[in-house]
Length: 254
Picture 1 (tube, helix red, strand yellow):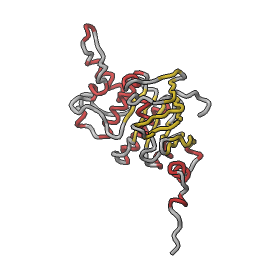
Picture 2 (cartoon, rainbow, N blue to C red):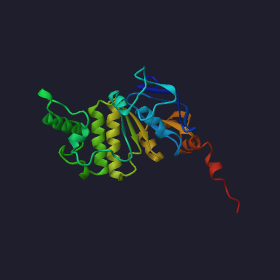
Picture 3 (cartoon, rainbow, N blue to C red):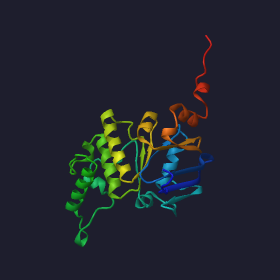
Picture 4 (cartoon, one colour):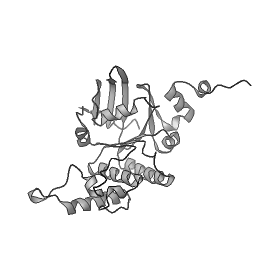
């Protein structure tokens, strides 16, 4: 893992809101073809970090680099154009648009005379879905899709912008076991094709099944980064909360 150069690095990132330090001197890096878990309790700073990566927020201090070049995103469009896509717990598709329109929303393909190239877009949507092994009709309205199917469309949208980094924030929270298995299949497929994937989940068993490395945040600070194969559930919990399980659940004398 360490032999590959990072596709993204964040160093000494800090961010405050009204005097509250959401992030303080946080570090994070991810390499191509890696599933990297981002772990921490609620309020640890995970959401703030990914919102900085995607241009929702700008850091108060620190530096970021993409493929070794310094970057700073003023908005989400700049981050997307740089190849960073995010899928959140609640899908963000437009319910009255079909799958094709949702994949290309805001950046429709055009033909001669500035006309929208609908046929080309439908063909490309069908190709992207097939690439993921997903059997959906590109003309289906988003409102008729399950949560899992909506996530597949969002992943197809990420593929359509040639995303180098795909951020997945609690993507399994509303899925069945079968849908989780299908999502994991696609995540592994993307990883094997070289996409860097940041995976956020409170379900530790999912991280051990899917992720290569994990970075832990606690109270807005960087705790450490470890290969998942080198840590136990107990060690992750200890890093998250700053105490051992024995301290959290002391034996009671009865």
